[in-house]
Structure formats: C-alpha cells, structure tokens
View 1 (spheres, one colour):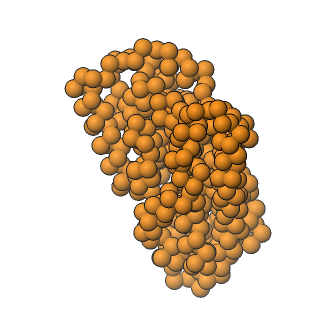
View 2 (tube, rainbow, N blue to C red; view 1 turned 30 degrees about the vertical axis):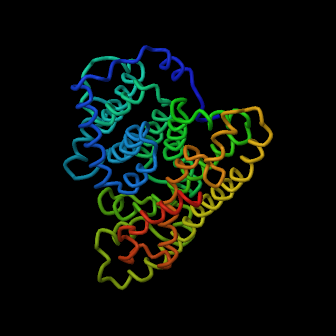
View 3 (spheres, one colour; view 1 turned 60 degrees about the horizontal axis):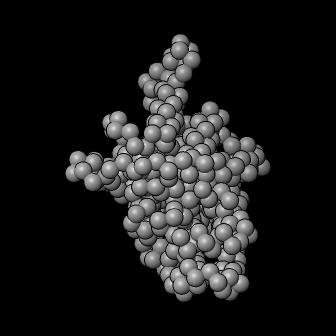
Length: 384
C-alpha cells in the first residue's frame, strides 16, 4: 500500500518527541503557518480552501505539502534574458545551474528534517518548519514521495516538452500523484484515524483502489494544469506544454503558440487559424484528463460500495463497528479528503468544455468562484 507505514516513519515514531511546549517554538510554528497560509491564499487558493476540510492535527502539514508544490514549480532555468545568461554561464563554468542548486537545497533540507526531526538546528524555511513539526508529532510523512516529486520536476525542466499526452500523465504520476499519496499517508496517522487504518488492514483491495484514485487524480491534475499553465509558460518561459504529437496532428507549431501568447499575432490574419488548431489540441488533451477524472469517480463509487461489506464481515472489530456509523456516505473523512484535490481540475475541465476549449477566451482564465461551494457539496456528497 502506497500510503501505509514505512521504515522511516516507524523509526521516527520510536524517537522520543521533542518538547513543543515552549512559547518560542510555538511562535516559530505559528509564524510558519501564517506565512504558508498567506502564500497559498494568494497563489493557490484552491489548496487554501481545501485545507479547511483537513483534520486540524494534520492541517499544517497539508498546507506545507501544497506550498511545497507551489515553490518547486517556481524553479526555472530560464526566465528573463539576464537570468538565462547567468544560468548558461554557471552551467558552462561550474557544471550546475541555479535551478540545480535550488533542487539540491530542497533535497538536502528535506533529508535534514526527516533524519533529525528533533534537532534544534535553526531552519528558516516555513514549509520545512511545518513538515518537521508534523514529524515531531509522529504524523505519517514519507520522504520518498517528496524526493520523487523533485526528481520528476527536475527532469521536466531539462526536457521542457512532452512528446505525448501520456508523457504528461506520467509527469503527473511523478508529481501530483506523489503529493496525493503523501497526503493519504498523512491523514492515516494512528493519532488521527485508527478506525480507518483498521478498515484498510482488513482489505488489500480497498488499499489498492484508494491508491488508484490518488493516481488518477494526479494524472488528471497534470494534464489540466499543463493546459491551464500554457499562457504563462508560453509568454514567460518560451515553452509550450501541449503534447508534440497532438500539435503535429493538427499542424500547430510551437512558434505560433508562443507568438500568440506573447501578443505577436494579435492583429494577424493568421490568428483565427492558429486559434482553431489550438482548440483541437486542447480538446484532445482535455479528453485524457477527463477520462482520469471519470475513472477516479468510478473507483470512489467502488470504495463506497465495498466498505459496508468490509464492516459487515468483521463484526468482532469493535473499533470498526463503533466508528463506521459516523462515516458519511460510508466513506471516512480521512479517506475521502485527499480525493478532493481533484475538484479544481474537474471544474477547470468543465469550464474548458463550456467555452469550446478556447483557452484564448478571457472567461476561461477567470478565477473559479464555484470552488468553495463545490468543495462543500463534494465533502457532504462524497463525490468529486
């Protein structure tokens, strides 16, 4: 099971917890929480809203996980002409780029806090402070998912393109799915969800299906994010995030896509043709993303149907019998909440369809006002 206990977590649980009662330490955690919350509220409001559904003991760690995604996605080898020249110079002279150094910083920092969570060594990074605090409170966090995320993101910066939509989904498995697995493990900490842990221990099938849902949501998130981020990547990084095979299929060149988003085709007679081709490419990429959302929904329904059978077949499990009565629509909160990360992608795909997959339509790029209501309804109906 992807999100059950690892040897690292077992080791950490045996460490005598570092005292967190001092006012200075609590102030440090409070400031880190405020910093990360403000970052997400401004730059990833969907994660900020979804954090309100996470049980309070795990909320800080969830905020840190989502902020980690945000910060790593900001790392870039290129950008302005000046930073591009600096990157090229460093790569040629010392063999590493500024991006390499940033990835190493995060890799080393993660290793430091996971290997020595009770160390009193000062760390100034708010994300790391919250992750370290979670470890000190014996919450389940697996560093391997974070390292896999870093590795996949670094490879993307080197390749700078996707040959096929399947490559985008593979990227999603190495990034967003990893964060989903990490969140699942976090909420399955013994101090938070003993009854759900019991439930999963009774069924390997349920463990597998829950992991599959996280995987499909991660891949859908990747495909939809690459469409959503296309204007930024094309205008700011001279990079096209659409799959090359689909662009070839519809005779759409990367140069034309970049020129569109940098405003060079604004008054050009060629714009309508490029716009139509781009709509066709986005349509096919969106189909793949939507297929993953649909599969995730089917598997959530499967989970909803199988849990009562597991409870019924284990009448002597007092913990299961007691708490299963409180599970909304038969699914425990801690099992469903990680699935809610798929809601923003589902809403964005609906918006794309509504506006005929025309990413140049200004309404497609408007902020999603339905997210708060949709997340509320999703939580109570157990659907994404």
